[in-house]
Image 1 (cartoon, helix red, strand yellow):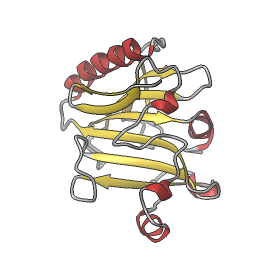
Image 2: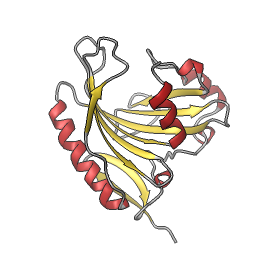
Image 3: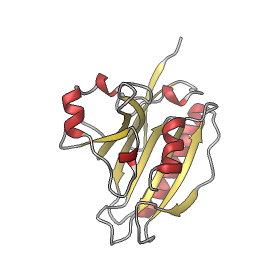
Length: 195
């Protein structure tokens, strides 16, 4: 019998099954990959809130995105919750992420990232990847970076903990994202999202 636990990772809430080996057991704000977005919003609300991120090629895919902020519907520890769903597959959620803003404080983001990744690895017994820094593909100037640590299950679903260090030319503040993503969405995002 699975016992569901809630732990606080720094100031992040993630619900999971004890010693989860399957990342689909994880939730952010009660939302898991594989759920239908219709469990949380009506079709009308989904249509009103859906959008395609700038500089992405999402419009050429079945994926769409909705965002909730503190001023919207959720009472959250996160500044934003972003959900990506498949519009052609019963609004199936491919990714859910919680984001925390670190205005001009990227080093604190890196410290929290390390703590969270170790805690998730301890809870799941899954290995964590090495920290990887790369250019953020959404910044055409090439001056923004993201640093990511990933935890991947046997199926290929993953949890990414990412710190985004945006250049001053971007309109975004530095941000941490904890994202739970299905293998299918992750592969699409890696290969096609910004082409």
